Image (cartoon, rainbow, N blue to C red; front, side, top):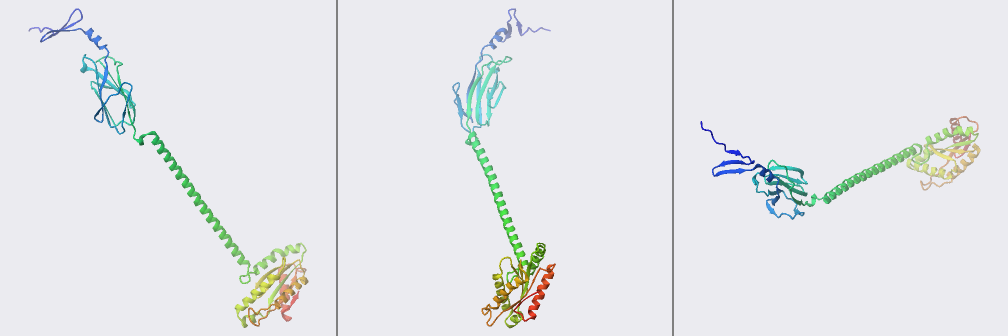
Length: 365
C-alpha cells in the first residue's frame, strides 16, 4: 500500500508549508498573532429611520428624531483586511439596555418601538478568539415626545386630576353640608311645629274655646297647686262662683247662638275688670269662677258687686233687641276651711243662696 505524502509540514524556522494545486504556500503563525493586535477601527456605515436613510451625525452631535418613530436600523463594519468576514461584533443601546449584546458576524442592529428619550448606540469589533478592543463607535440620538408624553403635560394632567378630585371632594362635602343644613332645618321646623302643636294642645286642654278663658281643669289645677301654699303661709284668699241669671230663657227666647254671644260678652267684661293676680275661668255652661288672692270674703264680695253692676248696666241690644243680662255670685274664703274642695262647696252654697234670694245679687258663706 502506497504512503500519501503529508499536505502540510512544519519548518524549523516556525513556518508551516502547505501543498496546493499551484505550488507551495507558507504561513507563519507568529505573524497571525501579531496581526490580531493591530487596531481594528469600527464604523457605522448607515442609519435608517422607518426604512429611510438618515444622515449620520458628526462626532459629539445628537440626531433629533420626530415623535412616533417605530423602527431604527444601524449598519456597521470593522475596518480590517485580515479575515473581515470573520470579525465579531457587539452592540449596546444606552438608555434602553446598557449591556453589550453579542451579534457574532451580523453587521446589522435593529430596534423597534423605542419610547421617547435620549439614546447612545455603540458598536465594537474584535478578531476571532481575541479580546474586545476599545474601538467602539457611538451614535447619539433623541426621539422627541408627543405633547402628551412630555413631563410638563403629565404634570398638567396630574394637576388637573388632583383639582378634579379635590373639587369633587369639596362638592360632596358642600352637598353633605347642604343636606345636613336642610335636615337640621327640617328638624328645627318640625320640632317647632310639634312644640307649637303641643302648646296649642296644652292651651286647648286648659282654656275654653268659646271665651278663651281658662277652663275648669285650669281652675281646679290652680286651686290644688296653691291652696296648701296659701294655708302654710297663713294667707287668706277668696273664690267666687258666678252664674248668668235665667240663661235658659235667653237660649229659648232668642237662640243658642245668641246665648253663646252673651257668654262671650260677659267673659270680655270679666277679663277687662279683673286686676292684678285675680283669676277668672269659665266653670262650665253659664258659670264662671274667680280667685282673689290675699282677700277675705268681704273684700271679694265688693269686687263681685262691681262686676255684677257692670254687667247689669251693660247694653246688650247690639246682640239682641230688648235683651238684658244679670248675674249672681257666691263667695267664700279659705279662713276656716282645710281643703279646697270644702272651699268650692261653700262658694257653691253661697251661689245657691243668691239664686234663692231673688238672683242678681252676691252672697257670702
